[in-house]
Length: 291
Ligand code: DGL
Image 1 (tube, rainbow, N blue to C red):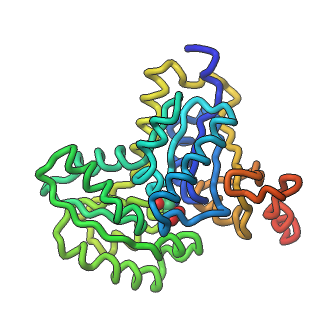
Image 2 (cartoon, rainbow, N blue to C red; image 1 turned 90 degrees about the horizontal axis):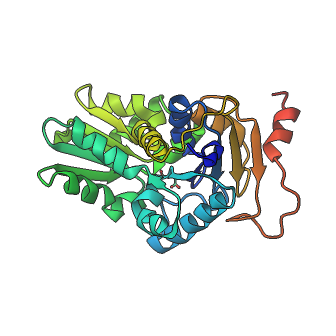
Image 3 (tube, rainbow, N blue to C red; image 1 turned 180 degrees about the horizontal axis):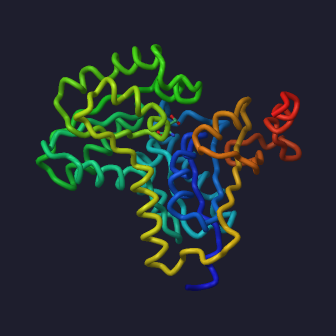
């Protein structure tokens, strides 16, 4: 163990969705502090070009490195699919994405070698999940489909009602007919829709959520580098956003599964250069609405 072990873990996402990964990290590694950056001024990444996603992801990484983190988790499937190789090359600390842990878990789960993958349009178009799965075992049959509206449903909290079910049915019926026994939830928002996705896919299909596998990989990496925290006072999360959208606390707390105390707006990356003092607009709103 060295003096660096009490530094925080850095996590970034295009917005609020990466908090589903933080939730698993905090469950598995309760002694670790976490610095989270959500690029809420520029979300979504899932509809943008590869060039733009790489540029944004590099800036997000640089922001976290400026916070002296010991390891960085790319808690965004779109950035993991498109930008991870560039990020890992640029960094002198470990950078872990959500794609490989999810692909490994799916390959270990399937019995009939048929895997379905859902994600944002950019993730699916990148072919990154297919490539990763075929690298693990080239006999796998894979069918992928983008489900962009799931992101809005998760943020709106419409995760288990008739609207969510109708949209899930429209997206997933072709996949259900493919006969996969395993479905990869290849987007940070999708774990919130597990129940409705399962209703459409049927009980025989296992849903793979890469957040738990990613948390396990983070623990292994920290342990093997002597960087697991031994602090008794850890377990805090500091959230930095490039913009603080209305309802951030409400949505973020649903994703994280616990209250979010520390939220700060930062000037960059993605934040306005002309922004003055950092401020938390949601805190003011929460106070005025009696929360
Ligand atoms: N976080 C993104 C992902 O996991 C979903 C939201 C977005 O499109 O930026 O792919």
